[in-house]
Length: 572
Image 1 (cartoon, rainbow, N blue to C red):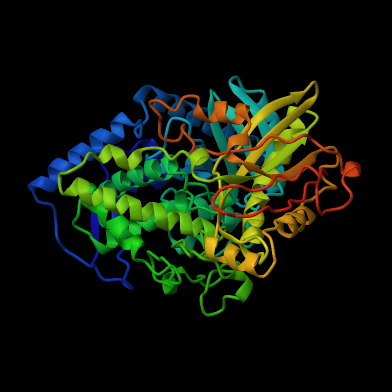
Image 2 (spheres, rainbow, N blue to C red):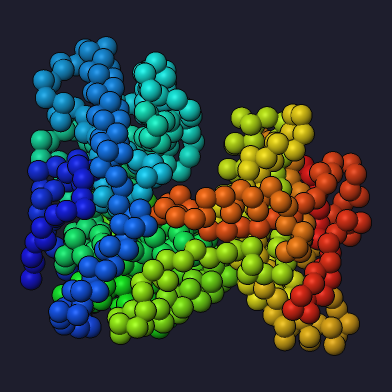
């Protein structure tokens, strides 16, 4: 059985641009592999609580101001006009007759939070430029950066052609834009192009084109997979606000990102199709408090995510063929071809933190639904600085801001590997290695020295540490840190440094704490990042450290009886 859901208040033209003429009505495609757990709908008290929940979202800035949203619309219009003229110029240069209507040669599709209309004031816009076959990807990166840089209001332009999703990043009238490109197997784009339909990807020959298409295809397919789009989007606003405040929203360090939280929310909407957001929120925490994460979370049957005949082959998530090194603690699967695990970066530690936060949130939501508490307590920000007695500090340094930008971005992308090595090392004695979802800095550490710091909270397994002591062993983090440092690409960043050490909570650097606590009052969704900690350490050159081993300045660990680890400390 299929139905349709009206798209009402709360959505902007991002969804209209993404779905085109069908934006006003999204056809529901049920998940035939899952049956509803309850058909119950709301009673009067549920509707009252739902109004309170929406009021709380407004108070916390979960809805962008209309004036700011208009700036986004105009920025996107400007980008679209540039792309239209670019395609026109290319077609004329190649002797191809330029068709009058721009939808026939160029389609600009926003995706992600902006497309769904659940973006916050500091969110970027993910944009895909869909072009006909005669446009080359080389033209995209050879021409557009220069064209965009000449536009009024465009700044901070940076091309990343070798990324998994090749992208041009820039700021347009104060709005951050990530622009990618995909070629369709047509000389001119069909007027009714619906990129969700597999028929349109059958003739695509290059994997990069399909990879770039997957962003908007996943976004739009999620909307097709929920029985009531508006209820889902309100639930998603709640989840994004809650996850950001509680420090569990960051795909890069191992927590679910926007896509994963959306899929997890969509799953709840499928299982409770008639419930409104206040009810769905409590059911979300109930479901995942009891979920066995050895089982994948899917909102579409895998059979419907297979490659259509003629489509370029891409490796897809398949539990029957999953090699051991591809198994992850969480599996939240995207609902289009190629199906992928959106929580591939997860670790046992991040899953443990999520489970703890979900259990706490379930308790709060239950009390709220019983009329005995305010929902505002659900969105209280975590204080990461107070969670642990000890932290691992990763300090990256560079001789200039431009060099630092690429360097710390690269180290941040590798940070999850440090978490995994800390978890697995038998001498670490750890129960949880909790990565902070934000970085600190840039911080001026000298006349021509800039630094960015990352932090990982350490929760030690008291029983394991006790056993280690009885065996005459001490807690030691040297090996996992040394192994992590060996993974870091030093050749590409020869002039930059990295140092790692354990610091006590009382030794967290004041500049990092000042940065974190500034602006904590009246936080806005997306603008208040969960707390993080760090420690001060003197920068040391590689030639000052005799290999990786005991460091004279290694900090001992206090609190919780954890012992005294030795930590490798090396500058690259």
